[in-house]
Amino acid sequence: MKNTVSLATSLCEQYGLDKQIGRVDTCLPGVRLFRINRYHKVTPQMYQQGVVVIFQGNKIGHLNDYRFEYDTEHCLIVATPYPIACETFASEDSPLIGIDIEFDLTVIQQLVDLLEQYGGASILKAEPNGRGVAASLITPDITSCMYRLLQALHNPLDAMVLGPQILREFFYLLLQGEQGYLLAQYCKQDSALSRVSKVINHVQAHYQQKLAIEELADMAGMSVSAFHRAFKLVVTDPPLQYVKKIRLNKARTMMVQDGTPANVAAINVGYESATQFSREFKRYFGLPPSKAADIGLVQ
Image 1: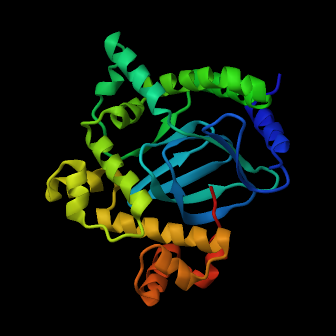
Image 2: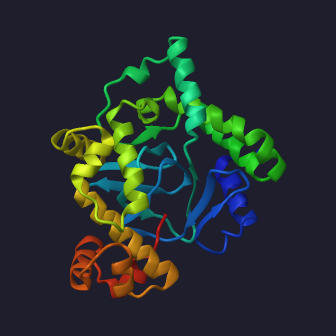
Image 3: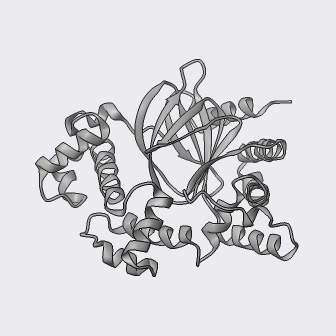
């Protein structure tokens, strides 16, 4: 019987990723397959909400002073969109292969309600560390679940019929794991994580506009000081520093994927000064905007 690595490798072949690198949507909505075939030094990358599961290879992530590793034994839960600096370990002979799974808020909320109703929610009452990202242990049950998901993804009909139930099982297993509180807090409207996530979603949609911290705090239903503390606890960056990182990551994507000139990208993401943009880009990525293509868009 094929193991998960063999299944993941054959799935890459099916989606044309065996001869290239990148990320593609699978036939199951909310699930994307990615493949990287070389080592990448620590580089900031934008991560969206969801779970990253790796079948081969590993990464080391850095959120300022917080360091974590995710690999074949640990998946990564991202409760709020983050620019995470990651070091990627992969090669031509042993590429990094994995999937991104988007959160299904409706399903997760139903599961949280059931866990609370039937007394199986002790982990949901765990004291969170505040951050909206964490590596979580992949248990044998999760391994079995991912094996069946990879099998289903090989056939569009299997993916449509069996995929949603497999993902529901996956979220259920995550909720019962050591980082289950992250998913639970993400669903609770009165939690600090949920309030900050609401603001972050607004920033993601309006990053090119002038964003006043007073308005962001009001959106979260907090005083400016309380919002600043909660935001930094969840994101590990102050609000305006986070906005700057979002703008720089968006600008890099425009330059690398669309060929947008640096000065135009700077204006598009909200910078009024091309000089300031160039200075901050180089400080953040380690290279000037003219070398954006050398940084790439590692997933």
